[in-house]
Image (cartoon, rainbow, N blue to C red; front, side):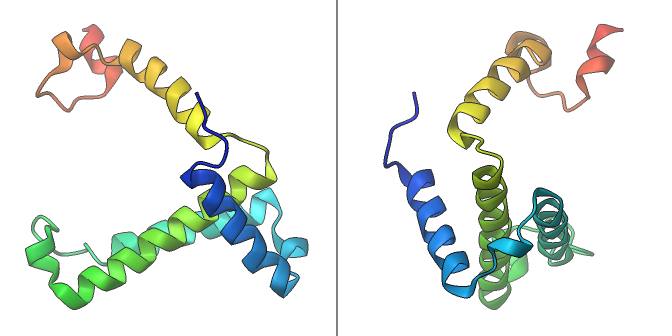
Length: 121
């Protein structure tokens, strides 16, 4: 049920334009984008290192801005990778949620954070 012109398509167009204006497409191989995505995710995680819970009040206003920017970087690389591999992220999430529902039936896992294979015991 992807809606043409939806927000993910708009993000893809914004990122594409940014990349095209800088002639960076030549560097955006799927491997390089996946690597950059991993680096940005690690930079996001760094803001939460050593915090008890990582809630907004624990981060503070300035750190929250930095976290928001790191989240944007993660999303930009994910959207770009999906664009390069012609993956419809909306459809991919819908597909994955079907699989997740089968792995983690709500009536069986509610309130329990174990991995799916631990429920089979």
